[in-house]
Image (tube, rainbow, N blue to C red; front, side, top):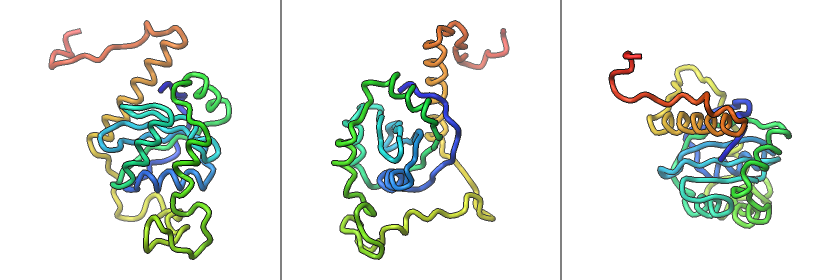
Length: 190
């Protein structure tokens, strides 16, 4: 997917995919969510809480949502970047194959815990949880808490950044400025 950079918002750590989608939906989030889910790089673009663009290593558009919905378990970490309205417009224009209809989003994620439930009601999807409890977040930097990324997350973020930069330069006809990565130990020989 070709996406504008956006303004870095935060990392979300050790959450389920459905938990992240629920939080961003409920908060009316507008921006990008990048994660690695089951070994597949996933890019989601939200506009006022709804997923409007989606792409994974294997799928794009609504097929990506079906893929995510079928693998709700397991924890992931995600990088969030906020988009303004003009960045959302650009993202939609440059990624027509990744567009997700609002109806497709609603049909898959309307019964995610917390949606259409009253406070205190126990969710049928996750017994023993009370909707709204998951929305509260711990402070970003608690004393003694160390922030770490595993190697696959770093590789995914790096690959996404490089790909996005190359695509951006190509789109504005400056692809001659792309510097190819050197390989091997003889990087000093220039």
